Length: 462
Image (cartoon, rainbow, N blue to C red):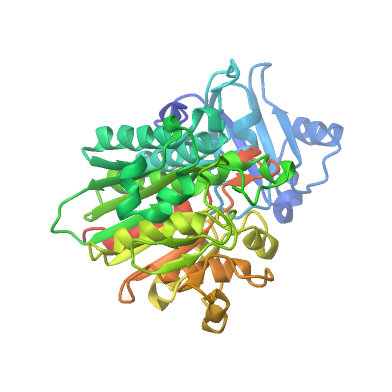
């Protein structure tokens, strides 16, 4: 794990190089106040004050230099100076003006490296000084949680099977004094038949399982976090083409988000009774793989006609959501890399959020804006519920035609949530297809900070 604690430190007046962050609208005014030496340097770099312009500015001696960045990111954006966090030499830096604020998060995440399969860069840490020392620990925890999602998702499926997700939960439990209970293999058949059906074709060492972590005072409000943990998705007998299978190591991204959010809740010691559930399976192909046309039993007692073995994520989530609801939580959040339709609708960066609870929707959307971690609410449109109708069972898992795929998947999940329980479903991509400052290509956390901020607002002690 990256040592984020070394990258954000209290400003006690120690020596540091200065970073000038200038908005394009203020660039000409800023430049007019600078020395002739700096103006000459800027001219030599052919800077015009457009976003992204940067230059090393000379000081009085050879070793005395500062950094200019022209940036139109909002002061509240975590990514405001992330490009510098990744590119400046090792050393200590402070902003010339204004508080560090959320930019400290992007500064640290820009230095995070996934090094399981390659040697890390040898460069030392770039340290950012902040006068807001009270929020350093919180910012570090957010960076660690984001890095956890990235690292889990980036790990190849050969090293990230159901047992490895269980190990990740055990590690968190040991750190925070939680307990983990796991139901594995054929033991799932009676109590969690959909989880068993999806995962039964995998090899014995990659047997399906339901991982449950519990933490907190039982007298506190109970909340449940559920994460889809499909560690690799071939599509099953409805096999994906090679291009569609290429990134399916990331199909456990929902589990990664749920684990990271649980870590934040426990580290912050929120006064809640936390129940984390991860249905962990590999959707494989073998002689005992579940088939198109099979009618599956469920923990809830409903029957599901399986119309597509590649719509397996909603099946395993259905049993996990049922289990979560049996403990009468006042809130359930689920994260899942569930549908390609969500990506078609909103692209990779903006996860759709589904809920029937207006208060929960408002809180999540507001927190998303505040944290610069936005989501977009899509409707649980009751008119599409009839698309789930089956001629031989209570419902199908995937309607024909492909219309409103993200919505019908959410409607399927809703059938497994108690009607009086606040619930939100987040259909996250868990992957960044191209790099941005502080956000490399690969595994990525979406709506994680927003969800945590919402929980803090709801459950922090007065």
